[in-house]
Length: 119
Image (cartoon, rainbow, N blue to C red; front, side, top):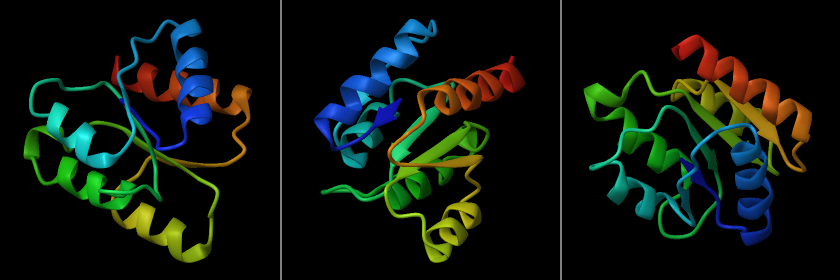
């Protein structure tokens, strides 16, 4: 799952992931992704933090509230990487946090590492 409210970021990140062999489901906010996770269990979630309707933290809490989803790797992306944000992400069990603008190489490396660990 890719959850990002910025259209340009959604397009760039989804293309990078697709070129990397991933099947990507894209959502513009956490609520839309939360509605879909009832039917599809992703191998990995990449989510922005600050979004309308349902932010990334609330979405992560929603995902983690279901015991069968606790092991899904969750990566946050954000333009705000304050110590408070990082602490909250770590508290929610986030595997990694990438800052915007995102390095394409770092994104690929993190995704490959997360998917390899799950294999």
